[in-house]
Image (cartoon, rainbow, N blue to C red; front, side, top):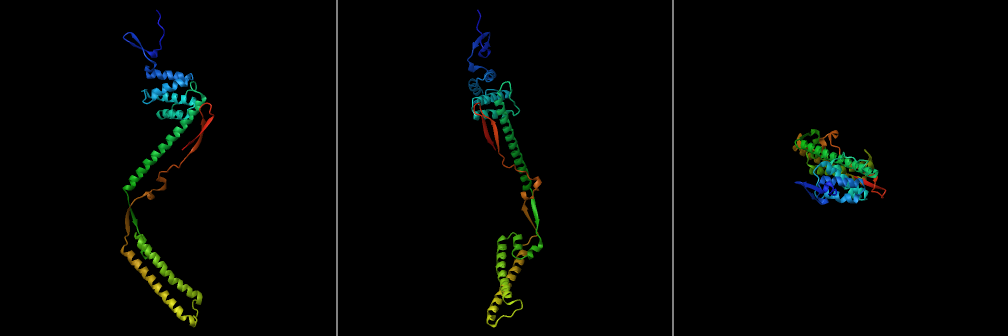
Amino acid sequence: MRLPLIPLSLLVVMGGSVIRLAPGHAAPAEQLAEAREAVRLGRYDEAIPALTYLLYPDARLSVRADLVEAHVLLGVSHFEKGNGADARRELDEALFLDDSVALDPLLFSEEAIAFFEERKQIFRERARREEETHKLAEERARLHGILENMIVIERKPYYINFVPFGAGQFQNGHDGKGIFFFVSQTVIGGTSAGLWVWQVGKYGYNGTVPAEEVETVRVVQQVQIATGVACLGLMVAGIIDSLIHYESTTRRPADESLIPADLKPRERGNESSWKLSPAPKGAGAVITWEF
C-alpha cells in the first residue's frame, strides 16, 4: 500500500515510527525557510505571523545570520503591506545585528530594496554620530582628568598696586574693596576736577573774578581742594591696602581655558536632513526628517 507524502517539516522519526507534528512544532530553521518561501511568493499575510512568532517575545532562532534574515523578511513583508513604522523597526533591528546585509534583487522588489538602502544609510549616519559623541565624551573626560591634576600659578605685576581706582584690590581678589575705591575716587575726584573745569571755563585760566562773585568762587575753590585732597587720600589708602595684601603669585585650579583651541574636542553641531524614500506600495514616497 502506498502512503501519501507528508512534508518533512511535519515528521519526526523515532525508533522507526513516524510521528505527525502540527505545523507550529516545526523546527525554527524550517519555519524560517517556509517564511522565506512565502515572502518570495508574495504571501506576506502568511509570512508576517510566522516571522513574528520566530522573533517575539523571545527569539527562537539561535544563529545570528538567521536572526538577521528573519528581521529583514519581516521588515520587507511589513513594507509590502504598507506598514511603514513596523518595516523601519524590523529593518533597523537587522542592521543593528549586521549593517553589511544586502537584499537579493531576485527575492525582493526594487521598491523594497530602495527602502532598505535608505534605512541602511540613515542607520549608518546615526551610528557615526553616536560614535563621534562617544569619542567626544571620552576626550572630554580625558582632558578633565588632566585638568584635575594641574595647578595654575599666576604671577601678579607689582606696578598694579600703584594704579588708582581699585586696580590693586581687583588684582588681589578683593572685589568689594575694589568697587568701593573705584566709585569713591571717581565721584570725589570727578567733583574736584569738575569744579576746576567750571572755573576755567567761566573766568579763564588766569582770568579775573568779579568782586560780587569772589565769595562764591572762594567757596567753590575750598570744595574743589577738599575733594581733591580726599581723592588723593583715597588713592594713597588704596595703594597701602593693595601693598599689604599683595602676593606675587597665586595658585588656582586649572580650567578649560588653558587648553589650546586645536586640542579641544570639537563638538558637532546639530544636523538634520530631509530624506525622500520610497513608501510602502500604493503610497508614493515618504519624506522623513532625520536629526
